[in-house]
Length: 310
Image 1 (cartoon, rainbow, N blue to C red):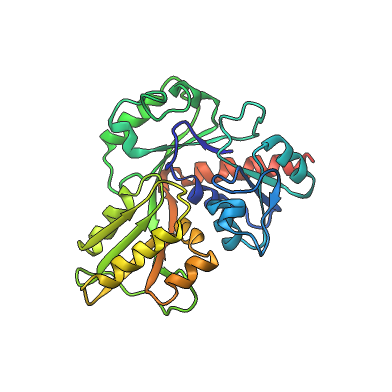
Image 2: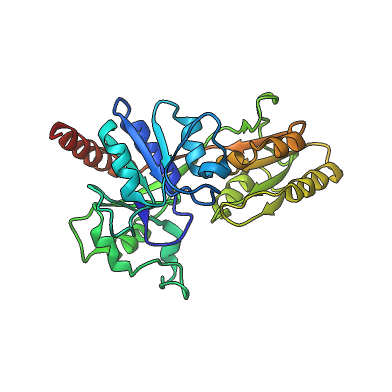
């Protein structure tokens, strides 16, 4: 299970993708709730799936990893029972709080920046359950760390987990990759500079790291910001197209996230955006060198032991 104690934005999607790559050669299934979909029950991703039918993150997994099974089901127990006989590994995306589901191995994610202030339960804060819930995990992974975080900062975070010293606390950061076109009609993406105005389109929980990254390339940003998993309406897209078309800047592009790009594949939205320079920015998680072997071996040893005993 890849989960967290807080709501939204801790980096479950890139961690799930890291695990798929780590476990290449195994029969893998990803089981997600399919947040924001307009279907019910157990649904297998297939060539006709859309963000509306299975959710944006499952659609991203399906597009990226055609050789694995991607399924959505709000009843995780039912989903597991339908998948387990044909797969070596089931990756549960965001099921840490599902008391009816007991994962064999729990990876718990915490965003680095959240430790700079006190954390409280909903509705006063963003925690789904008390912080001590971390003791049910097997690995704690701190996500979105600065690449140059100090030992003092890391020790401050590690001390929060002192009550369960046997649980490894590891650090990771995001690696932004080269931009790619949302639609195949476009050529390769331009390199961002201060001479290029960026219209940034986001519907994610925490766009701040992305904004900061783009600012390192271009300080000229117009941010079109929407809530996490926002289902873009035609009116939203028409407004974006009008803002972009009326922008007097000579060099300009639209940049979005890979997750948002999944929601822009709808035929009616694609028709409006197809002729515009619109690109998405893929991300990868990089686990700190000091903890990568611990992380990888914990996962590989667990999977090896469970598949051997079947």
